[in-house]
Image 1 (tube, rainbow, N blue to C red):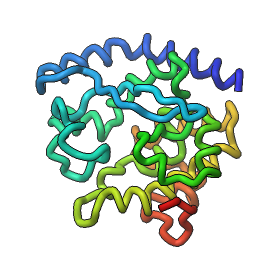
Image 2: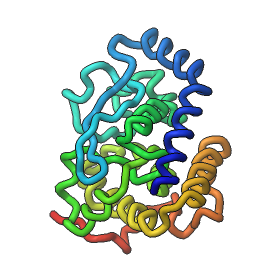
Image 3: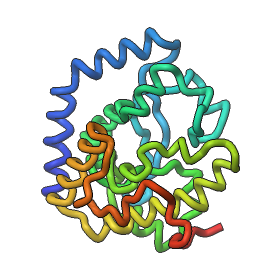
Image 4: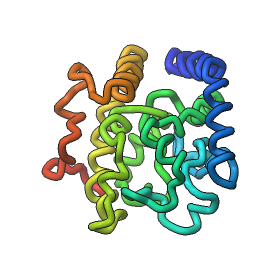
Length: 225
């Protein structure tokens, strides 16, 4: 874990330095596109259940959190023009390198959940999730790259997220908890880059788990009501 933390600090520092011009351009475009802050800050659950505030580039209109749920559905009117591009390219996640430096997150780890959804996990599931620093990318982030497309408004988005997406994500989190290591983190980072550049998941990452065709409805892990 010490080596993993070293990789995080070195990777986040280099990433912020190398991407500084890109971050500056994105910040300017966000301000030109719509009024409001550059960053979106939201409370998430981290290591040992500790709460922290995540950094993201703002991709919605100012005050969007007060006009809807924490979930973003397909065609969500709160998403700005620039925000839609940032979300599809995952550039909105880049500021989380700051969270990595602060020790709130890791480069690779389970995606940090908002507190309101943590009550749906069982105690055993929470124990696994709280044992790891949340990350910018992981198996679930790759599988659910376009999560909002699954929340299309034809069904209650909270029910779809709680009963279908959350169990599938937890299966990925549990898998990662058994495979934590520097080499595996590097594989996931490489797979994330390939997915963003080439639009496909490399077969060596585990295609059976990372199928994008459908959610594993017939193999849901337990989620408390």
